[in-house]
Image 1 (cartoon, rainbow, N blue to C red):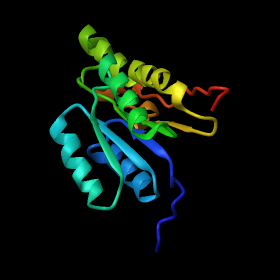
Image 2: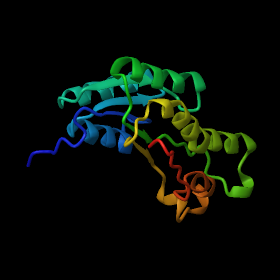
Image 3: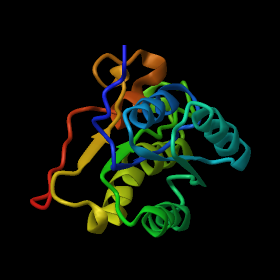
Length: 172
């Protein structure tokens, strides 16, 4: 069965996309014709993932980006626009779960990291990307089942990965 090319001519950024769900999303977008910009915190990871995608005939651009780092987030957007001239799809997939403590036992530093990566980074990434998202573009924010039914060991992760918030821009 031939894969439809619904994303032919589109440019898609997928954060945390060198393995797991992010990699699979990037792969599918690429197989459907998108030029895919993948990212991860480590150069080796983006290089390995990019080669796997290229081996499948996917146009891929790999950028190191830790989403909680403002300069790296801006670099991800700037390099994408420099290479492709636009952004049509942003998939915010990056998240962290640095602790299995109960909510009341969670250290302040862990709360900061959860907020920075799981909530704030997505909003700031979209702020950076917004000027380059034409009408009709798509934003996908990946959340977790833990947002609906978090086990005690993932309670704070669940709070910061809740699927209950959305944002729509009049320009999109």
